[in-house]
Length: 84
Image (cartoon, rainbow, N blue to C red):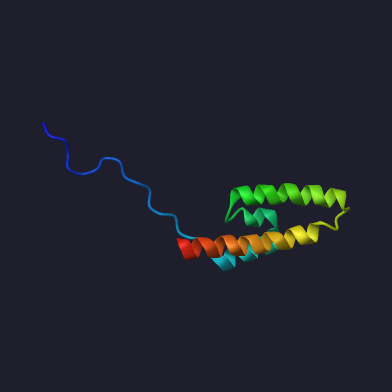
């Protein structure tokens, strides 16, 4: 009895790249939670940073972290789209 000529394990199909507009809008309105659309690890890191800086700067550090989330989401989504 010969082995079959076709592979028995099928690789997963490639994941569709994230949409840049969606990533930016989610990060703009949801901050680190929206950043998790493109990268779970980045979103968790920025959420931690948002909490720590928010506490130590009495809320002043929230705005720069929020804007950094938007920039990170844009770069992450556009990099994934370009390098698919």
